[in-house]
Image (cartoon, rainbow, N blue to C red):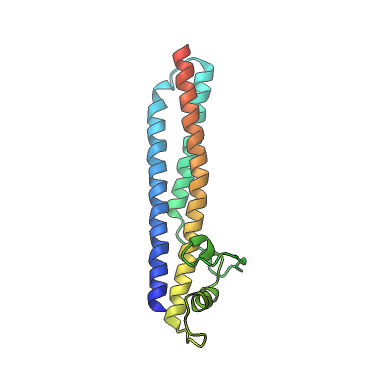
Length: 168
């Protein structure tokens, strides 16, 4: 079972790396949008100026959310889990809703281990680590969605500002 748990943990850590990479890309994209519109700060047309401020606000919110996501690394593992009907034991959303005992029992049940398999403390520790990392990954992906929303708003504001500036 230790090998199974190590494999699941590695899979969750790969998802963690993907989430952090996505946040880094969002931060870079927001920084580029801000740098792009800095030249319009001195524009005297009021609606261009307001759109410029909107870009700064939306991109700033996106950056702040992504920085919080990059910082989130610890969660409380002792939450009461919600029951999840899906039995995919590699998906971080499913794992984040389980306790370490439920994960171990599900591995025994769905991966055809003997029903009398004796679980040791190392396996409990690995399962707890998997659950904690899955909760972090779930939080990072949720924050990524929030950050992406504000990033898209900043890009749309930037595009509208460019179009209106070209019309003036």
